[in-house]
Image (cartoon, rainbow, N blue to C red; front, top):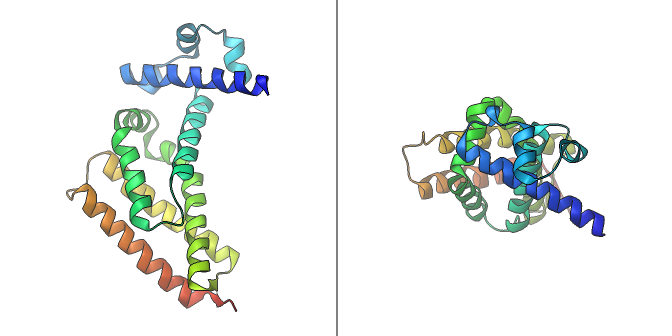
Length: 194
């Protein structure tokens, strides 16, 4: 148990250092050596925990996505979930923009897409239960991927401040679209559960 705590603390230390450097310069300009020097750990320790700096970045994003999913009530309404994600983007805009500027949209999407798919899979499963229908697993997977792709594009535009509408209006539009379309799809394509 002590080892796991120490390992997690080391990862958090490295993550904090990477975040600090990303406030100062582009992700692509940050080196493992700088992070190690800043943390007071050797390169061997870094590479014990992470394959490279991209793996560290992926770990940071996964930890934050995990926190979002834990803090987010997936049984709650769409407005709460969308607002939570929009608030996360707003709060972490400089960090996320640094990643976006270094990796581009496709690179950033690669880091987050699986988490969005998992989120939508949970949302769809909850709606199926609520509506009393069951979708075929391959259709549920398709819908999860479809909505994850659509939402990641909208969130990218929000991150880059390309939406002319307010925070609350984006939330309302996304929530309305998701709720009405998903419930209609579930009712049209699902099998009634007794």
